[in-house]
Length: 183
Picture 1 (cartoon, helix red, strand yellow):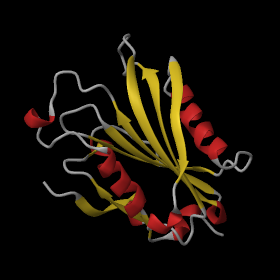
Picture 2 (cartoon, helix red, strand yellow):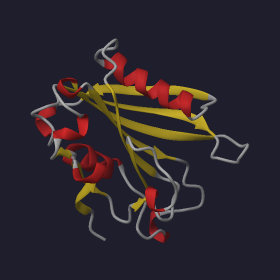
Picture 3 (tube, one colour):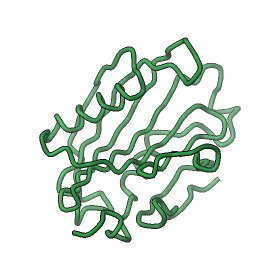
């Protein structure tokens, strides 16, 4: 199954390459206007693209950590652990002309799904693309819960990989800057 090429996001203001089988969660339930959320059809994996207010009070690696901790707080994470934070070279980004700073973070958060008591360790991978001229932080998140009994051989489409997430991040492209309002 091929990845979805140039999938329109935020009413076509952005586009990106989505991994095979991605289901638009807004077809299933309400999603905030500043988010695009996709889930895997078989696993509990999800991908989220968020347009957030630029957090100018934090810079560099601290900005990536700030957003990781903020997401964990919103999700009610019982524990959070950052495993790595690295600068992402903008030369690989479709948004390179308007993104002077980008970071990738990997970590774990212990969270319980809605209506469940048991918290699970979820691998969280985030990319933070900073767009200061639009006063916006674009946060892309790949949630990878434990796969339990699923193995890649018996899941169709197979579970998403970090390569799928990287393709989403690097392919994200801006088509209509008026989404940010008057500049």
